Structure formats: structure tokens, C-alpha cells
Length: 257
Image (cartoon, rainbow, N blue to C red; front, side, top):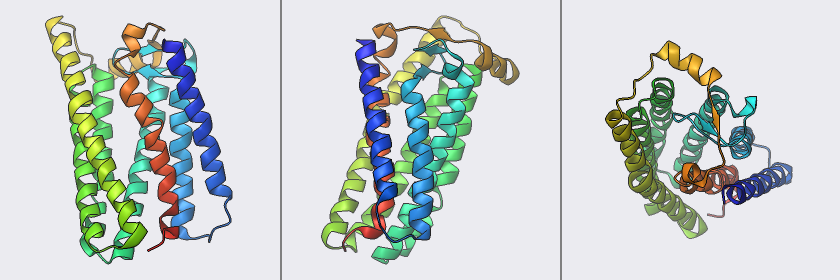
């Protein structure tokens, strides 16, 4: 079952690369917005492709393949770079959308997305290095805050938009709500449960220095479905819908108003 899921991830990754290449090759006006969205989206697509090919679970030090590319530090570094690029994409998207809809406060809200996600990344690294799942809980809650900020900005733009752009904004609101719901129902309870099991087992946390060395040296390769089944929902959606949204943001300027 695990290998079937991995093959699905590989197929999605190949589709993502193809869609990004098509998006980059289209004969559309070369603007500052389009250029940077393509660059940032390209990094995000590459990062998600890498993580699809070499899945891993950071705190448990589990990976699918026993190779250097499956290392915890390498995977977390790639994920951090990709997620910050996605956050910058969201900021650029909302800034441009606020100009198109004539909603000034949406651009002000967009400024907060990157700082919130940077703090989320710091919290994630703390969790990965120390083995404290509460760091992941904080990270997920901060992602929820970012989605709420985006939803609030979208709502203002939706009121002042018309036609197809109004539909696109409605999709954005639905995606923010869906992501926040997924985090609240699946991710946060999962990490709290793991934190509780870790405490009950009286496992020790690591110092930041020891944790860094641990991420560079330790990993456990497994194809057990019992290990991976909890990761399947968020990984599959993250590496598919998340990437499609990233690529879709490239085309905002071409949306009919």
C-alpha cells in the first residue's frame, strides 16, 4: 500500500513539473509580477517534487528510502525554502489583487503573511531538533493564522470584485477555509497525540546542538503502512493542491475582471 501511495506522489510530481513548464512557456506579457511568481513557484514545485520522491517524517526520523537525500536535515531545509517562497507568493498575490479590486487594507494584511510563516518555520525547526511535537503544534497554528489573514483579505476583495475575478476570490476563500479546517481537524490533533505519547513514554528531548547532529546522522527507512498512513492525507494534498495553487497564482494578471 505504501508503494502505491508513493507512485501516486511521483505521478503528481511529474504532472506538477509539466504544468509549471507549460505555464512558464506561455506567450504572456512579461511583467515583474509574473516573473517573480514563476521563480517562486518554480522553487516550490521543485521542493515538493523532492519531498514527494523522498518522503520523511521529521521527528520520528522515518524515511521511505535509505539514502542521503532522505536525510532529515536536507528534507527540512528544502521544505523551509519552499514554504517561505510560497508565503512570498501569497503576499505578492494579495498585493496585486488589492490593486485590482481597489481594496487597500488587503495589501496591508498581506505584509503579515511572510513574518508569520517565518516564525512558523522557526517553531518547526525547534520541534525537529528537540523532538518536541509542541513545536509542530505552534507551527500549524501559525499557518492557520496566515490562512485567516488571507481569508480576511480575500473577503474584502470579493465584495469589491465582479465577474470571473469574483469566482477566483471565492475559490481562494474556500481554499483558506479548507486548509484551516484540515490543520484543525487532522494536523493539530495528530501532533498533540504524538506529544502526549512522547511524554507518557518519558522519552527525553534533545538540546538544539544534539538535535542538529541527530538530524544529520539518524534516519530509519521503512515502508510500513502503519508508519505512513497518518502522513498520507496532508502530504498528498500538500504536494498536489498546494502546488496547483502556487502555479495558479502566476496567472492573476490574466484573469478577466
